[in-house]
Image 1 (cartoon, rainbow, N blue to C red):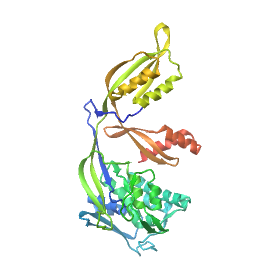
Image 2 (tube, rainbow, N blue to C red; image 1 turned 60 degrees about the vertical axis):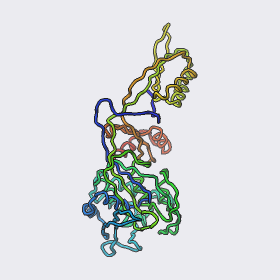
Image 3 (cartoon, rainbow, N blue to C red; image 1 turned 45 degrees about the vertical axis):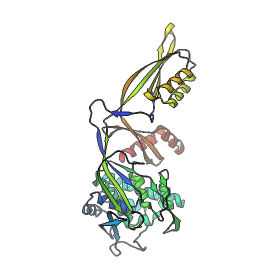
Length: 421
């Protein structure tokens, strides 16, 4: 059986009286960009205990910093600013103005793995740093193992990234959705020189994500902020329909005056039905005189016209002739164009149809990173919980051919990576 989603499908809740699942969603409204310290400030503003965060971070083999928070105003709006202050002489070498110490990914992995972090927080933090290193490697065209992070590898950035992952656990967030990101304009001065905004590594991280230009001077999305957004967000786009519980603001270090330099977070519950109900029409016709070569073309035309499912069943017809039962499931609003395809592309002189209800699981498409490249995962949900996750065949096939490995190896790794999240 073949099927596909159609954007015009109208769905309702389950007819079985099953309660829906509710998931806690954090929507990141990045109207003034995003950075690591802004994310920490937002989290504390939403209710994360700074004292608890300090205790968790103290387990890391990382010295030479202090963490503080305060309420500040940015263009008339109030938010929380979290500052990571580095302290020379407390076990760290600080050759740069902000206490940067150059670190490679191997050393950073050791710090993350030695901190006794919750598994999901540990996995997210590692992915965030690997995203940074991979971007730097592509920008400078050197192997990732040769990259030593400068600004983003400093003590404050390590605290920002690991702290952000811990904050999501403290807020019990099931899903993160991020708004499109502003690009800013002008230049930025960093370790390697003066570069346009967004910085090259930042732009590399944000490939494929929705960005927009604006007239604000300066860096609005830092490499650390970009890495957190890409790693933590399940999707980018407008906010979903939420029952809002809390609203928080994380303040950036600068007060621009002309706009509030804040990262806004909306924490709420996303109600999801146990299953989805839709009204459909089932069309059937029997055919015994159509050239078999036409059936593949017919299926493509029916899907293009809006069919949800198309399948063929071998049957026995009049005078003992072998034939095919053509079954088409179509939304009510696509009945006419699908019916026209049946008459134009087949030899039938008529078909029967009936209106029916159809119940199905909710579905999403997510993406995971593997050593073979990004792979989409088709996810089925019941009461808001994942009950099935299947790697997209075409993605896996393309990756397997490119890498010269068996298809099943790519599928296994994509599935395992999804369940590690």
